Amino acid sequence: MANKIQLTNNYPNISESDKLYNRALKVQKPVTQTLAKGPGQFSKGVAPKYLVKGKGSHVWDADGNEYIDYNAAIGPLSLGYAYPAVDDAIRAQLNDGITFSLMHPLEVELSELVQQVIPNAEAVKIAKTGADVCSAAIRVARAFTGRDKVFCCGYHGWHDWYIGITSRNAGIPEAIQELTYTFEYNDIESIKAALDESVAALILEPFIFEAPKPGFLQQLAEVCRENGTLLIFDEMWTGFRIALGGAQEYFNVKADLAVFSKACANGMPIALLTGRADVMELFNSEVFSYTTFGGEALSLAACVATIHELRDKNVPQYLDQHGALLKDGYNQIAISLGMDQYTRCIGFNCRSMVTFTPEAGNPLELKTLMQQEMIKRGILWAGFHNMCYSHTSEDIDYTLLAYRDVLLLVKEAILSGNVKSYLKGEVLEAVFRKVSNYNIKPKTASL
Image: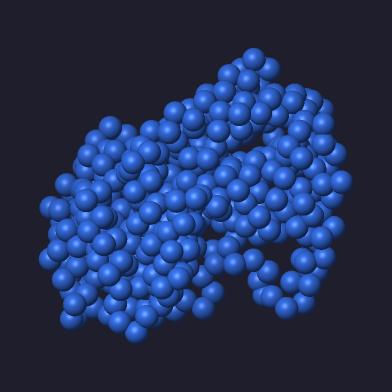
């Protein structure tokens, strides 16, 4: 019988998932379209590999097992699965058509709505994916400034200009790799020392989990402005979540350009680039960035409906309040169990992350153990709390009960000195992200 959400489950039967996976291995390379959804991030032998249904904050795998989902489809689900107002908008538009031979009025309606809620949106460009709008922002920044080099901090997609500075840079010409440099978050002095007349753009996620130091983002905007460098906020995770207007609204700072995707259409594929009118004007003639599906109407309808729901229901406040219950509740449990020396939950309330200290041992082994035990108890867990509007107080109460159960077992495993012996499947792979080995150089040296 398929697992329900209860503390007394056995490890789930995932035989149908495994059958699908074995079929995929024969025809797909890679088997996943998104690394964060792939089998390397979920315990083989315990975790499901395929989901077939979602409703609200719950999902069902290919074997019928039910879970509370805190991954939110790796970010896009700001409201929840099968959210009525959004699905109704999609169905209504589906009756009239999906993609057309001319522009659609929803392109105008959405752009006007975005201009109302995003602080720097003097102009709006619509695309399909986060990587597309990041690359469009870099291209137009280079065109506007007449410069080539880029400073970045965070994850910005798979395109050459960014991925060339990561460990997965095969196929990227060395000349491209040498145009992008990384910097450490919150280190304003290293940025001041390195900025010169060759830097076209500085792009960063306004925060990932660490909060900006007081004034950091404002100082960043100032030093970029003084240097003639365009500041780009990558708001894939912060946009429409930390506040309706994203990090720009929340921290009261404007970027020259900003990019959004994930939360703004509750799962439908769309991305937005907003920014200064004088910069964005270059897309009209000098800079080329177009795609056949940029005006696909189902996603436009979903985006309009989602933004209205986010605004009318004050969803960012809901995410903050309910996310705080989960984050603070986890930390209180850790303290009560004497586990606070080994683990804590960090980040902003709308998106927090469970971490382990060096004293706890191998973090990937610990994450694997935590994941297998949370999945057993009906929670699809990957270390994050990506909150959505459908997460209820009951979901959170149950999750905290599960955490208390699981942290007791994790404590036992840590004290045994052999966490790996508690694992039912393989240890998780490391998350792919450029987080260290920063290669920014001072302007007195050759860039």
